[in-house]
Length: 300
Image (cartoon, rainbow, N blue to C red):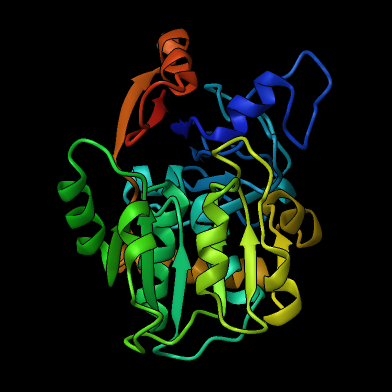
């Protein structure tokens, strides 16, 4: 392995609250990329020097070396930015699937999301821009909020507002923007109420996270009078249903890699850490008293 990030799913796995509960002993790490150093005589599609990512979840990327069958690895271009390669399989793919699989959107349509500065949120902004969709992006207020807003606008965000600003906004009330058919939620709790108020009739709210650690709170009237739909999304399940060699997966990764090579998809703000500093890195990742604006990536 060359690089592997620390993702929330890894922390949840350690805590025993993730959807996958592996048997112990277990090597952690859901994501990352490596380089082929040796290949057996019967290997047909991989060669020494190729970059690869695991084709399965919970593969155990936090290690220096691994012995694996060819069928469980996916070749990626070796001219990608390494940090992009390390973070390719989870957040960009999650963003892409949510934008594609739940509503049929046309160019100019608006996508509304909270946690817009998260790794998934940043990918939503960039991929939506590439597909011709506009984004309205909600953040929690914090020190340095104007700099953070500008960073997201530089990625292609059309509108960036704090939760308080969005609550007072008339973006969807004065006709400036059509109400969104697709809304993406990573916060849950009471924050969902404002999202639902803005939704179009028959729209879909996709929940892929629960940063507030609170259940969804949705007004009953929205179900009755707006006929909204609430669904969940988990990239791991999609991967189970679409193997390493599926056309859907190949096409998705090809598009994302092309975007990355063109510079229209970039890795989130990150910091490289050596694996032997894992205790400090995990402590930082588990700290709930601070905002996490930098993804930590193990570099081997």
